[in-house]
Image (cartoon, rainbow, N blue to C red; front, side, top):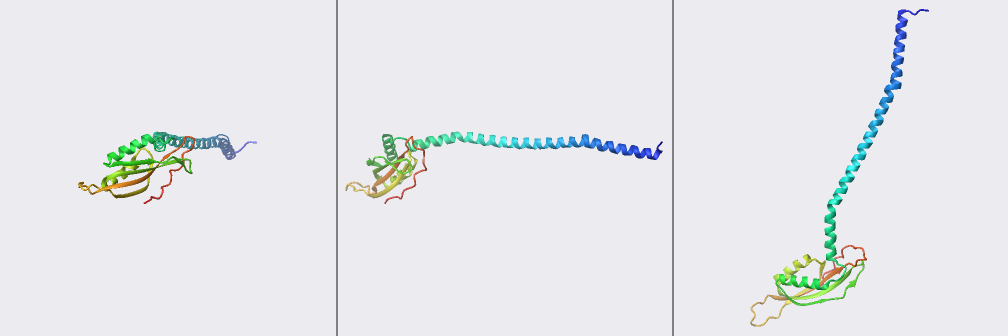
Length: 199
């Protein structure tokens, strides 16, 4: 049986469509599926790269701050040493009083007292003489000492003067200050709360 030219065209078209469908199903669709898989893998790789870059930036920032952190740790260790180190503290207080233009009258430290939080505090009673301006200068210098110093008591009175002394602005100032130590086997606690000033 012979097919007419028209039927041959129809059959050839059907075969061509069938071949196109087979090529689409067997070659093109899997290729698109592989491309989608590659796109997903590329997106995942990009996400991992972004995470790695963020982690690297974070570590570099921490590394950059490590020197600053170490400097703060050393400064805190100086402010709250493991032992009272009273001789060096007294020398520093004497130098600070002298720089303020005052005269050191007396200094009486107490025994270290262990307080809640693990640190110890030493109370020091000081008496200085000089002008009110010099006293204010001392008050401004004390917080800048290498040790952690808190003024917890302060009183001032006119100093008794000789009759031939023209300077009537000299005052005697009694101060109660506290310094702190942090034993080596105690983890650093929060900075001690500011005590109420005694008048």
